[in-house]
Length: 126
Image 1 (cartoon, rainbow, N blue to C red):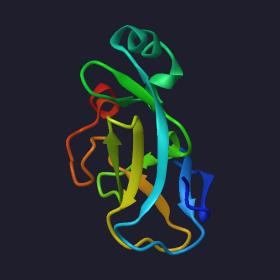
Image 2: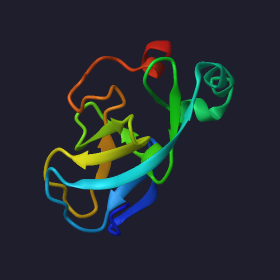
Image 3: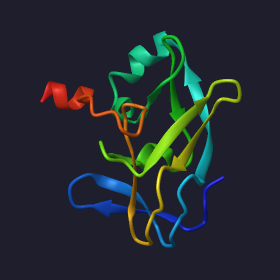
Image 4: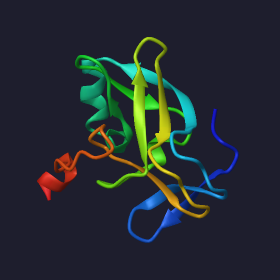
């Protein structure tokens, strides 16, 4: 399930991103997508590819690749959305944390919690 008002477009600084054509109320689920779960051994191989930048940590040593637009949401420490992992159903969903205006980019915090300001792995390495 992806809200029909969502679309992807390129941004000047971050490449592809997810945007909305219409306002969206806070606390709205905007996308629910299945994931492909991969074990620790498979993750070692993914870490050697560009897909490493698009996977999510899963429970234990596993990781997953989300379907839909989920891999395209950009990071923000002051995100307007949050993602939730449903391990039982192998899905991830995105939910707004505040009202969103038409034309606004939808961002998640890659740390998991929408207000977590801990430096990300790619910032630590640079």
